[in-house]
Image 1 (cartoon, rainbow, N blue to C red):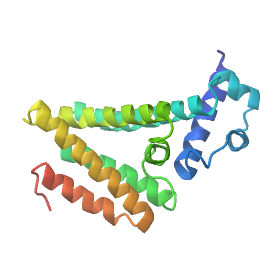
Image 2 (image 1 turned 135 degrees about the vertical axis):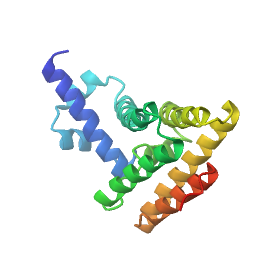
Image 3 (image 1 turned 180 degrees about the vertical axis):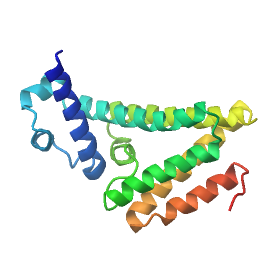
Image 4 (image 1 turned 180 degrees about the horizontal axis):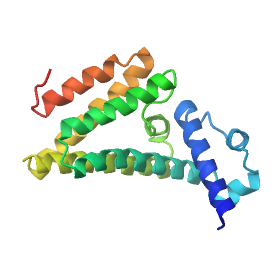
Length: 193
């Protein structure tokens, strides 16, 4: 695939990411993606012969990798788990405020819509969340938690943050994320003010 083809593919993924996060899977049709990205319909099927589900899966995977990279860099430098959750809180809060509370977690909207109806997309969402949890659990293990305890605590922290994103969105306030930040600190035994 040439440079132009890669650019078109990247444009389709970026446009889909933006649309599905704000409007959901069911609110984002292929015509809307084509219109928003300016990509020819034929290019969509050339790059994503599996259609909408393949394109959405690529968008979710890319978004998930970006968040995982956001966590991995400070984790590699030895940042503690509380600092990593701070990064997530701030990243999600910034996205919410910037989008007027339509976009927070890049995975949540599609995960909520498709978990019970689309096995392929459910699996993609599950793998993205599992990747984030592995990063957090890895840091907890480095801080002295046992493997099972680290995995459980990482899952709890992630659940707190994801729930806070939902509450922040419907309340149109970052306050639930700030509360979740403190709850995660408490959960992890940090007890910082």
